Structure formats: structure tokens, C-alpha cells
Image (tube, rainbow, N blue to C red):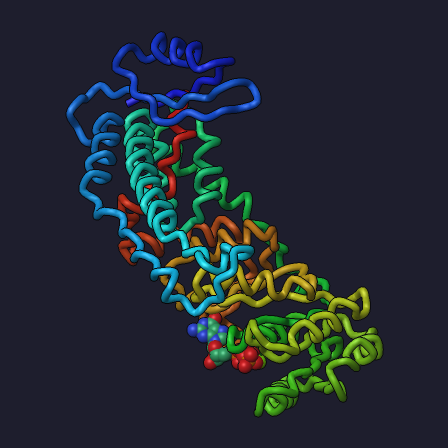
Length: 411
Ligand SMILES: Nc1nc2c(ncn2[C@@H]2O[C@H](COP(=O)(O)OP(=O)(O)OP(=O)(O)O)[C@@H](O)[C@H]2O)c(=O)[nH]1
Ligand SMILES: [Mg+2]
């Protein structure tokens, strides 16, 4: 099937243009007024009789209208005499109070249903058309969806592909594209140091990551230039956890009196090359979260906040975490629990969309073994492998809803 959109000064000219391009079989799908005149969207299909044709789609919609239940008629208003209202010629509204316009409501709902049905049919047509015209592109969209890559990103990557590309080339291009968009920082904390506060939701693995980095630093540089700050005074046992780590490593653990005293404590520790700061985990709806993040954002310019995200979390919740912790102005993020994730594409899409560079990933509980400096190609390849091993499948309905849009089929 072929779908075209024409703009002309008037309807007559628009229809003539449609007829010239699509012939007498063309079906008008929609028309609307525009500042230039009218815009007409029309389609023609070469497999008449199939439900995939616009004519059949229109017929299906018409049949659905005919079959839909009648619009309920509102109950008759009570007789004026029975109303407990003062009869006054000057207040006719009191005699006939406005009834809720049930009929209009029902018609509105009916139209919405029709609109959805039509959109579904058109999406199906457009997706079928796209599959026929660019099978490699649609296969790649399917595979990216199976990996868990977000719709806009998948569309963007596939949209850059040449028309004559084959599937193997297309796959290589998509993986290279994703790797290129996924920013990473390199192993810079362990090489040159820094002052880093780990923020993130409760239980995502902040303290474990801090411990892994501290041990790795000592293995490379010794304990002299390392300082730890335990600013989590919220969770029972959090201080003990940090003190135990400090004792084990032979490194002092500093505790600010209050969270607000953190900037002052940081400036006192300036001579240390690496200062790692454990912060309380916050539920995303924590009332104190904004205040704490504001303290971090206004702290010494040397301080950098790093957002910890658990890869095992759903993409929607990761997106929300990125938004909620934005006031702390994180310069980078760390991805924990990669070993627990059943799909990685969603997490990678969130990081790419937020342009948040990834510093390290963690794929287990062992300290310090389960820590890696983030490498984008490695992560994207891991996401692909994961989709294969879990047998992820994108169902046809999802693909049609995501990628079956008219613009793709418009010539
Ligand atoms: N499987 C797996 N478990 C992890 C990983 N990182 C941390 N954990 C576990 O997750 C749990 C929580 O880790 P913590 O480091 O205490 O998390 P947190 O963010 O500091 O928690 P709060 O301070 O309570 O907010 C612990 O049982 C860790 O062993 C990881 O990469 N993979
Ligand atoms: Mg902790």
C-alpha cells in the first residue's frame, strides 16, 4: 500500500493531485485545513479485499460504528412542578437546571474509540508498508526492541542507515551507533583521584561501590592519600559498615556532625587525592532529598556527585531517578547489579538520553573483584548477548504501535 499527503490551495486541486499520483482507486484517509489551504492524506492498496487495505480499514471502522451500542438516551428531566425550586419568571435556569450533557459525553467516547481503531489500522498499514519497503530496517528495529532500546533511540539509529544496507552491516552500524552515544569517563578516579559523593536510591549499591573503589585505590596507590566520609546517619548500621571498612583498610573515616556540615569537612580533607563520600540512600519521594542534594550541589567546587543506578531496575524507574537526582548535578553515573539485570537496553537508553557518562559498572557483591571501568562497546555487546540468552522477543503489536506511524509511509 502507498500513503501520500498533499497540500493544495483548495480541495479540488488537492484531490486532483491525489488522483494523478494514486489513480482512481485512492481512498481519502483524512483532510484538514492548513494556512496554505487544505491537506489531504490518501492511500491506495494493490491487494484489494485484504484487511490490510485502507478501503478495508475504512470499511471495518464503518462496520464497527454500525455495530456499536446505541448512545444512551438521558432519563427525562423531572416535571417542573415536582421540583423543589421557587417558580420565578426571572430565573428560568432554576426551573430547568442544566442536565449533564450525557449524549455529548457518550459521543465523545465513541469518537475516541473510532479514532483509536483508525489509528491502529493505519499503524498496521504503515508498519506493513515499511516492512515491505525496508525489511532490513524493520528487522533491526525489532532486534533493538528485543534488546530493550527505547523507541526514539532505535528509530534514530535505524533512520541513519543507508537504504541498500544488508542485515549484517546494519547490525554492526547499530551496535557502533549505540556505543558511540553511550558516554564513558574512563578509569580516572583510580588513576588521578577526586572527591566523589555517591548518591542514589536506597539499596542500589552505593556503599559497596565505594568499598570496591577504596580497595582498588589502596592496591594501586596505598592508603596514604585516601579519605572516607560516612555521611549516612540515617540508616541503622551504615556508620558501623563504614567504620569497619576504614579499619580493614587502615584509612580514617570522617563523620560530619550534620549533613549540612559536609562542605566544611570536605575542605578540611583537601590534601587527600581521593575522598569517597557515602550518602544516605533516598527513596525517590523522600522529603529530605532535595535539601540534601542542594547541600551537595553547593559544596566545594572540587566535589563531584556520582549517581548510582541499579541495572536491574526498570527503565521507567531509572528515568525517574535521573530526574529526581538532577538537582545534585551528577557529573557521571555508576551502573550496579549488572549481573542481576535481565535486559540492559533500557538502562543504556536512559543513560544515553540523559547524556550521563558512565564511570564504572558492578556485576556482583564481591569486593573488590566485581567492578569494571565502563567500556561502551563491551556493555552494548553484553546487552545484545543478554537479549539472546533470555530469548527476548518483541511482539508484533508492540512493533506496530511503536514504529507504524504514517510519516514513515508518506512519500
Ligand atoms: N548482585 C549484586 N548485588 C550487589 C551489587 N552491588 C551491591 N549489591 C548488594 O546490594 C545490597 C545493597 O548494597 P549497598 O551497597 O548496601 O547499597 P546502598 O545503596 O549503600 O544501600 P543504602 O545505604 O541502604 O541506601 C547488598 O546486599 C550488596 O551486596 C552488584 O553489583 N550485584
Ligand atoms: Mg549505603
